[in-house]
Image 1: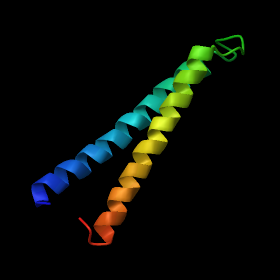
Image 2: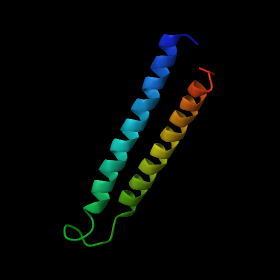
Image 3: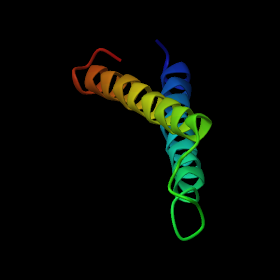
Image 4: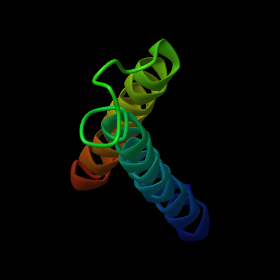
Length: 77
């Protein structure tokens, strides 16, 4: 793999982690707003599912980035 392609893949993987992190933050803020003092303490199923999906995407993005980093450190990239 040439250097430019490798760098582009690494950049895309890091951007995926950053985007997923922002989605978790946004979903958490939405969920948090449903608890006192602003909310009634009964989070909506949609807010819970959105938060869960955001956490799963972050976990997947981090795992993919870790695999890529491991390959880089092992000299496989």
